[in-house]
Length: 221
View 1: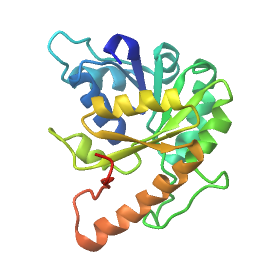
View 2: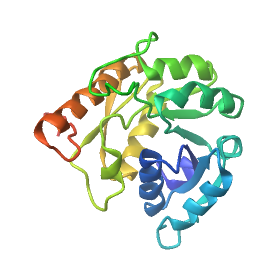
View 3: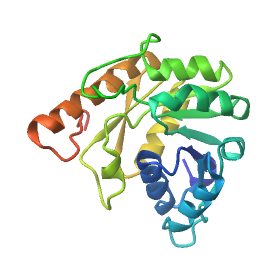
View 4: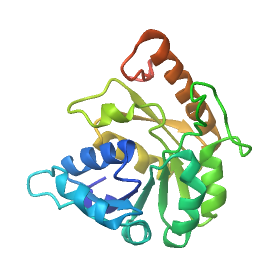
């Protein structure tokens, strides 16, 4: 899949740690990135700090609605507490598009304890809130945001979930462009496993003093 085929990627929550890390990596890979934030001025200022590939498109910053409307692929990178409100704000702008949801249902203060929502996963919740016209995939649950902000490869595989296999393929490509290996994880319902695993990894980090524990899938070459 070429850069032109991917089109513009709007990262909603793009000034945050996870969203910002993805914006940085995709921009350096030569992709066309839009930073989306509730504060358009903050988005524009952050966009100006991001490095781009030689000859690559400049990163731009826009408000949430405008970014979602412009992006061919929309990435949701906001805290679980903001997921529903943000999706309500952008739902009309993402019909017919791929929505890559990175939401993990962490409920402070006990973020090292698995607390899945009544819908069984944040991804299923996102599909319900976005509507049937949106192809929801989910990914980037098990990589530390601070790792994405660093240079170089990351020793972590990324599981990609979705009911639409072609949309999952796009997700795997986007993971690769971010410098990680994407692995098909099956239907959207399976996202619950990766979402729950985030709390497990947080617990591991605390117990072993790890700096961003992740997962690597073995046996697939």
